[in-house]
Image (cartoon, rainbow, N blue to C red; front, side, top):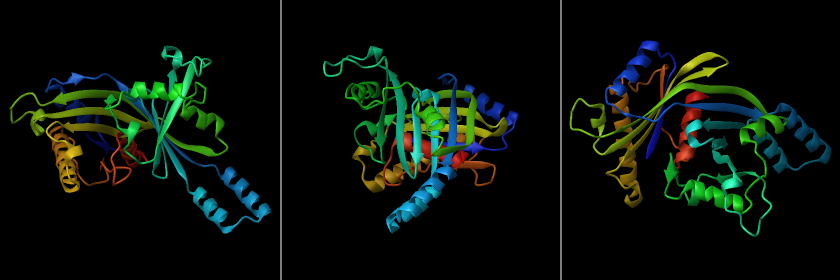
Length: 304
């Protein structure tokens, strides 16, 4: 599966309406409404000043000075997508983590930990790898994500609280991180398209045996319209990336991107290189693919 995000800054009501009409003509499966919240945090200058004062008083070595300089320009992004069951993706310096919180009342308690609280919060850190529980996909994975998170909670990977990581950063870590901008996606629509006929004029005939999940939202920051966002997840059943060589995998990805662009062209939102249309498909780590990491990186490029 490959993901891509298109942001159209000056989209008009007419062009947005035409987009939805063209999709509706294909009789897609409606996946329902959705929304997102994207936040940008910068390291708090007060925190940097405290570090500088500490360094001056303790005659810190050169390594600490290098560390201090690195902290000054550090930026953190958080992305909360409603369709990911309130998982929050956090990215700092090309390293990402996926946080979530679970109600443990439905978990099978183990004898080794009988005194768990009624709500548990578990998280897993994925540092640009593609192993184990990092093999998530939208709405499921090769490993049952709910089962993975339940097991993590039972093993003690929990902070014992009910707050989301977004709330913790804003309310408890404000001395370290200062919120600079919040962008929200409202009025979200989502569609599921598959190849079902041989009509050459059909949108669904962009590629045989293909599945598209298309999500759209109007983006706002401080009440001002920031653009029309289109997120596309594309899966081609005819390819098996795991059994491909590196060259074959790259060629397949380029073919998949071409398929996505062709679909957008048919939906009246062509992928053109100008200041109004911005198309992003880049991975967070160019050498490895991860659904959460790559999607977050595309949102970061589109909205920051």
